[in-house]
Length: 145
Ligand code: DQA
Image (tube, rainbow, N blue to C red; front, side, top):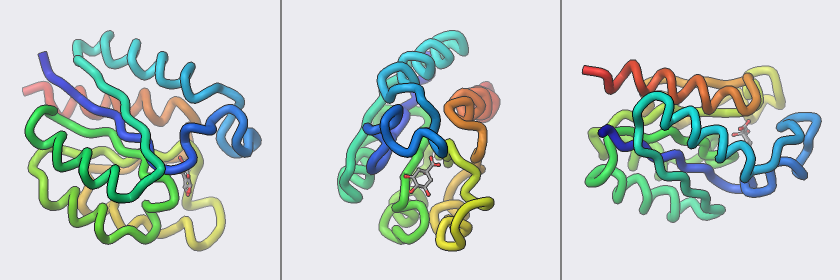
C-alpha cells in the first residue's frame, strides 16, 4: 500500500473560521476527514500533519522521505518566500504536489509567486477544499506504476 502525507502549513488549522470568504466555511477537521476518505478510496494509507512553523514543515519533509511515497503540501504563506522549504523539497526524492485552496494568482501580487513551485511536481490552486482532492488524484496518477 502506497503511503502519502498531507502537510498543512501556517494558519490552516483555522480553516472554517479564517477568512471564510476566501477559504470556505468547512472546518479544518472536516476537510481532513474528506481528504482521508478520498485517499483511502484511491488505496492510499494517509497521514495528515499541520504546523505553523517553517522548520516543522522542513523536518516533516525530511522525515517523509524515509516513510512516505509522496507529499501533498499546502505551505501557506511560506509558499511565497521560503527558499528553505523549496530546498527541502529539492533535497528529497519523493514527489511533492503543491496545493492552495485559493487561486493565489488572482489575489494580491505577493501571492502570485510560489518559490516552491519549481521544486514540486505541479501546483493545484483555486478549487477550495477540492484542491486537496484533486491533489490526491494527481498523486494517484504519479505513483500508480
Ligand atoms: C494558501 C494561500 C496563501 O497565499 C496563504 O498565505 C495561505 C493559504 C491557500 O491555501 O490558498 O495561508 O496557501
